[in-house]
Amino acid sequence: MANPIYELDPVTHITAGALGEPGHRTFFIQAERDLQRIDLLCEKQQVQALADAIDEMVANLEQEFGVTRHTDLRVDEVAMLIKEPIEPLFRVGAMGLGYDASRDRILLVAQEALAEGEERDPLEVRCFATRAQMQVLSVYARDVIGRGRRPEIVALQTEAHARRNGHGE
Image (cartoon, rainbow, N blue to C red; front, top):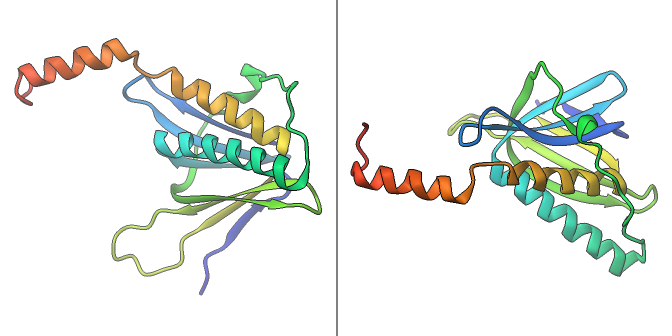
């Protein structure tokens, strides 16, 4: 029996963000349709890959369909914050994007990561969003990712770890 597919069509809001301190952050994708909200737990690299895929898709849509990229978008920091409490539906295993040309909507599909040997179909979430919503998501996601540990802190932590030869303090 197939697992249910959760569909938000169209989303009224979509964002990606992180909770916690740099170096120990937990990343999420959050989508809403009116009063329904879905929280998905994901990795920082998945949020980065999503932002990259959105940018690539928007560029391709501009070339293939002649749809113009939104250039006057404003990111409302407060509106884009992850809303709490967070209740993740699942941890994301795979994501993909599609385009519904008849409605000019970008489709985000996220599938659940299953444990090794787990014999069932993964849960799936489908979110239909405007190009503008997805472009704002991309810009905001990159900003959130950039708020992580500063490069000089990462270098110092790596050096300290090497000096201890991987051992605790």
